Image 1: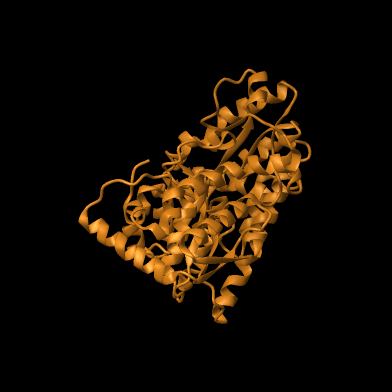
Image 2 (image 1 turned 120 degrees about the vertical axis):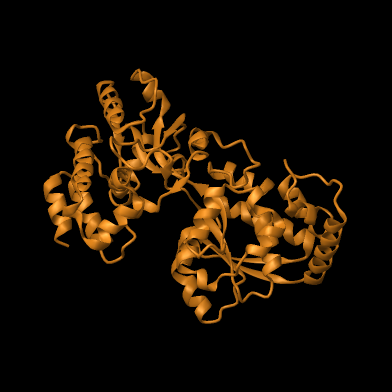
Length: 432
């Protein structure tokens, strides 16, 4: 593993030896400036011994991510004397953190989706620019994650990404092989051909859950035609009838259902749709990279997973370089008196040993680019992920406008249930 500035600073500090172990590095020679920095780190950490940091976590204590974080916290305390008091809030942390900080609750750091932290909680979070420069975080992180995070906070990084995720089509390799499919589709027309072969082989080509699942289908298809910015502008301006690609995208998605390429149960109630892959009833699902782990947890299935990005469309502005590329993230509260200690602990989680343990425990993408062995379930996404340079919001922004997202979602669900046709879909959105 290459040695970053982060490791050079901490490897010389006995009180921070746990962080060295977490990063999987080995001590080496360092310049005089690094020795001085190490001495400072040792002094600062020793002075902080006996300190307690409060961390509000998005995980429940029984989840795989939580178990790894707790292990890292125990090791951090054993080596530094600094206790991490973890309050397992679960996903409700998103609804609780702002009010708690406004009320003066003593919280040192918290985690949630990194877009949420950047957009909704940036005013509470510390500027991490200097600490990142000193630690060498950029040497360990996918550039698209940092650049996307900065884009939400005027170029300032206020969140540390971890447990990256992406979106695309997850499929059962055995079903593809049985249907004689040797190449994954790169265009929507090729996807239709793949669907036809799978249907002929006796399996449901695709499935989806209603809500987020159907929103992803429409978001990606329309996003491929016009791009995310134009999609969001269409929503904000209510110009659905003036954008011909809206009807084209609706026709494409409608065809998946009308041709019988979707499961008869689709769109299903979550998680029934994705579970169809676990029960080997359907071959493909457009979703995020947490799906393989969810399917295993829900069904106990052992699937040889394949992956490909949502295909390009003829005449479209976006191709497979554009996807939902995101991560969970840690935010350090600006009012915390222990920002450096919080940062040091977080770095032990998002790099090295504990990052790899987290990826392995829940079949997720490693955050540390030095951890090059991805879990088997998501390994198919690795070559594509490294080529993804354009980051989409969830559902390519279809859910971004709070005033219209429920109305849009209902129209999409009706289209996918074939309760309305593409012309009626456009008219319904144009009248909102």
